[in-house]
Each structure stands twice: as C-alpha cells, then as structure tokens.
Image (cartoon, rainbow over all chains, first blue to last red):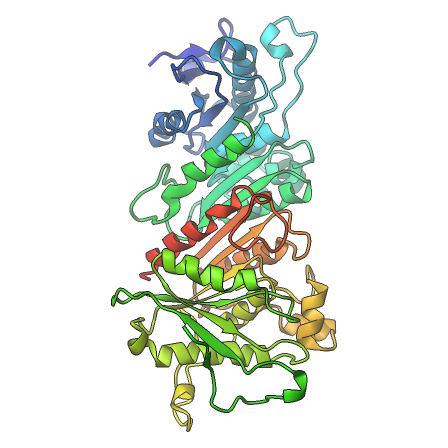
Amino acid sequence: MTEIKLWETDTPDFDPSFGQPEPTLTPMLLSDGQIHGCMLVFPGGGYTHRAFHEGIHVAEKLNSMGFHAFVVNYRLRPYSMQTVFSDAKRAVRFVRYHAKEYGIPEDKIGVMGFSAGGHLTGLLGTLFDAGDPNASDLIDRVSCRPDAIAPCYAALDHYQRRSPAMMQYVSGKEHPLPADLYAVSPTYRVSPATPPCFLWHTGADETVPAELAIEFGQRCIENGVPTSIHVYPFGRHGIGLGIPEAPGAETWPDLLGKFLHHLGF
Amino acid sequence: MEPVKLWDVTPDFDPSFRQKEPTLTPFLLKDGKIHGCVIVCPGGGYSHKAAHEGAPIAEKLNALGFHAFVLDYRVAPYHFPVPLQDAQRAIRFVRYHAEEYNIPADKIAILGFSAGGYLICNTAVMWDQGNPDADDPIDRVSCRPDAFIPCYAVVSLGLFRHPGTAENLLGEHTLTAARTLSCDTLVNGLTPPAFIWHTAEDQAVPVENSLRLAKALLAWNIPVSLHVFPYGAHGIGLGRETAPLAEDWPELLRDFLVSLGF
C-alpha cells in the first residue's frame, strides 16, 4: 500500500538511531469520483507499537460506509509524547491542505482512534490549533482541528486511570503532578469548541475503564457538544471491529457511520 | 388481549383516588414458541401514564421476538411504595404464570420510560426472593427482574432530579428521603444487568441520571449497555424525526437481550 510521508523532507525531531521509519499516512480513498468526508484512523498499541487490526481493516469498513480514510502511521516510543502528538496534528493539517485534491470537503475531516490512538484522538479534539499564518511550510498554516472525533475504548484520562508507566510517558515526567496529567488528559480540556464526539467502549474492558468514556462524554455534553456514547457490556480491551465474545459490540461501526452521515460527512 | 388484575383484592386500594386497580395487559407472540418477555412501564411523572410509551412499545418488542406486557401501575396521590408494590407484583405474577405464557421463569425483563424508568430501577434494586410462607402462591415467587431497561429514566430523586416525579412519588420531598431512594446509590452486586438509553439534550430528566446509573453498575461489574444519543427532547418513545439517530435503540435492546439468552 502507498504510504505518504507527513513531512516530505526533514521530519522534525527525527532520530535514525530509534530504528523507526518516518511517520506516514496510508490513504484508503474511494474511487467513485464523488466528494466524501474522511476519517483519519489512529491504531492503538500503548505507544509501543501500532495494532494491525485497528488500522487498515477499520479504514476498509469506513470505505464500505461511504467515507474516505487514512491510516496514520505515527511514531512510537522512545519518541516523546509531544513528538507523537505533533505527528497527529501534522496528519490532520496534511489531509486538510490536500483536501480538494482528495475529493474531501475541508470541513469534513474527522479523526478516530483506539486505546492510545483514542488518546491521540482526544488530544486532537481538545488541544488543536488554527495553524501558524507565518509558517514557512504552507501545511503548517492549516488548522488541525478535526470536524468530528471518535475515541474507541480510549485512554482519555491518565490522571484517573493511573497506569504508572503511561503517566510518566504522557507527561514526560518521572513524578508527574496532577497538573502535568490534567494537561495531557483530554477529559480536562473539553470546551464548547470540541468537535462532535462519538464514544464507544466495552464494560468488561480490563485495561482502560469504560468510566473514562462516560466521563469524557459527560464533559462534552456539558459543553454543548453533540455527543454519542455507546458502552457495550461484553468484550475485552482491543476488540477492533468486533469479536464473537463481544456480542452486540459489532454494531458500533454502523452507529458511527450514521453519526457521521448526520453531520454531513 | 384483555388486561388482567394483579390481585383479586388490591392491597392499599383507595377508591376515592379514582384510579383503576393495577393491571397487566399481555402482548404474547402466537407462534407457540418459548420467548423471553419484557414488562413495559410507561412514563408520566407519576401523575398519569403516557399512551405512546405503552402498547406501541409492546408491539415493537413483539416484532423483535419477545413476549411483552404493559403494566398499568398506580400513580399520585398514591405514593412510594405503592407503585413499587404494583411492579413487584407484576413480576411475580408473570413468573408464576411463566410456563403458561411460554416464558422462561428466568427471562423476565422490565422496561420503563421516565418516571416509569424510576419505577423499574426500583424493582432492580429493591426485590426479594418471595415469601415461602405466604398464603397467596404468587407471593411465594421472586420479584427480581432478570434485566432492567431504563429509558430516559429518572434515577435520582435528589441531584439531577425531575421535580414533578420526585414530588409525586414521595408526597413531601425531602433530601433525606431522596437520598435513600436514589437508585444509583442502591446498586449492588446482585443487581441485574441493564440496558440504559437517554438523549443528551433531554431537558426534563438530565442525562446524568443514566450516566450515574451506568457507572454504579460498572463499579459492581454488572453487565451494562449504555446508549446516549446526541439529539432529541424528553419523551420520544420509539424515536421520531426530532431525534435522529435515537431510533436505533430497539434493535440495540434486542441484541442485548439476545446476548443474555432471551
């Protein structure tokens, strides 16, 4: 599959000794010549890898529902959280800059992600910026605000979740204070500017508690953000498009499709 | 089918309140097969019962493959615990007659809208296994529902309450009484599984009622389905044009009940 580099030359903070390729996008575009909204897909993997079943297969499902899609191949540890987040922001800017060429409306660019990819999705929905009008790189002049977000069994609150290694990674500190965790936990950064939000999770998730989806959803609703929350009872963490042990949860993609179509995607 | 009285002699009945005796109206599938069932409790703030949250819901449940009953329970000026007694009796009644109705005795769910939603949450957190020494054989049967289905339901009678419902149920509303009877705080490890849905824009019963209930169930590892839809006012029943996206709830409910073996 074709991959397109997020930065054509000079990927910022690139360190070849980390043994990772430069960050890329894998476009999965419909070829009907029609205009469609799109979703950027951020696979999960705890920032140590990118889970295969949360990437291309999800993009294919999005295509089948009538959306363009891009899988984002963002950098991983030991790159810092800030570097990884900059890959995420760059991905949105890149797609918006090339939107017309792709047959995508500039205001129908959504973002979705699973687990750690869900954390990136939440960060994009709350810590976006409007671009830098003075940037020499034209792509950096473009807004990175998504037009919809879909965090899937997402780690949206590291202050509450309290996984020690992850708290250190996302804050960049060995002994993070509460404020350091609030700053990188999307739940505490929701505002009226947060884009429409579709959340789903499984109640039996042992890795990321479903309460995080409910609370992020509550913050969105309190801020007047159109919000869908879907918690299914059964299924472990990481079921992607669904597994037999999670009966019922396989309906989430269709619900997401209806949500996005209703927003004009 | 015709309504059936819950009791031959209704306890605590007061004719001066000008309400009928509580009844169940069966909506049974006629295929001769065994199906789980859902007892439907319409809303109405404990002052009346909303027609669109009764028979049409039972008919939809039939279409999804379940037997159903509509419960006509007593409302104000009857106060707590009379409506609860009606609902508990309804569950016992159906369970007692389960074989005759082609219903497994352990596949009896209860569903309610708004104030009817509070009522069914009550049955999920306040139940007993029956009294083996009761004269009335129906009273020897458990009144624990096997699943409960709050639909844009009142859960709390204190914070996030719907004032009309709380006052009509309690008579005199005090925070002390409200705290004792807020269903999210009464959840425990024996509470049955739940399918909860609500619209985020609900202006009458805040969505926080459903969010708090869902978190209480998660805290006890009770299987819970929660579906919050972005649009729609309070009281949409089966979902209407004004509540796009919410019309999916009955099919999601079907999946949930099927996953529990209904």
